[in-house]
Image 1 (cartoon, one colour):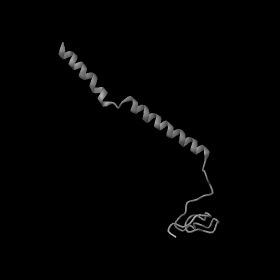
Image 2: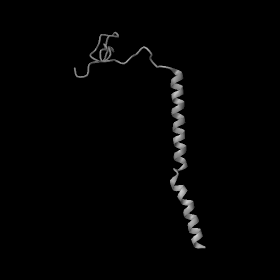
Image 3: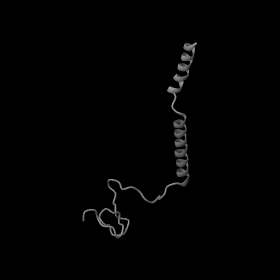
Image 4: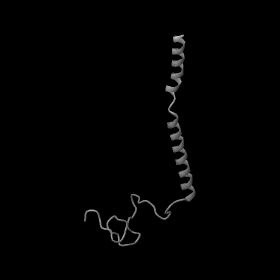
Length: 83
């Protein structure tokens, strides 16, 4: 009789060790839900500043007015890095 309890105990433990904890599954599900909702909201909102484009290899940074202060994008009151 002691052997039958022992073998049923082992049979009950094996499936639990192969599955991740329910809290981890819930956390990952919640994380995926939050990211998908934030992506949907961001897509619906559109671009934040559609007129601003990244500077390319041949781009002229600083030509957008303000006097071109050495790589700061022409922002007045800003000084160059090591000057």
